[in-house]
Image (spheres, one colour):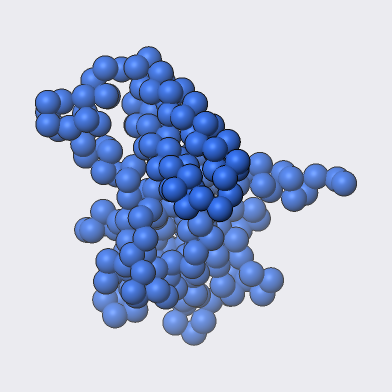
Length: 217
């Protein structure tokens, strides 16, 4: 997690000791929710890498997803120019809204999230291998999973070439989308098997983006 030059003590809070926090999906860029944080919530977020807020109705500190499991793994925290608002870029483990939609700003949209799939894979890892393809694949080990990733990557390349050769073909585009989905699934299984978090991948992408943005031209 990165949080350049953020000191909770120097932020500007309102007369209730709060400031607004905008939460953004680090992968899609979608705005997920608006919440409020006091100094303690900001400190907890920076210390733990999990989004913490202050509930104005319950008047208490709360960790997002503490009861629902729909946590927000924080990748980056940014302050605005007046230091009176924060932007939290995070990887959601499920719906960000209490209405079980992806975003509080899109109540009719329930898109699939990679973070959600990652959590499902972790649950499937505990299932009997004869009842779950994921559990069976994990039982076979990293070598087998890595070979599946290579296989799916090859099929994705072929589908991409075919889609490019027939740009007007909806079927070819559909084939490419299906192969990318297979590849993404097996990559996430590989992360599960090796203990690497999806948030680590997002953080690395964010680090590279930050370096590219600050690199001399």
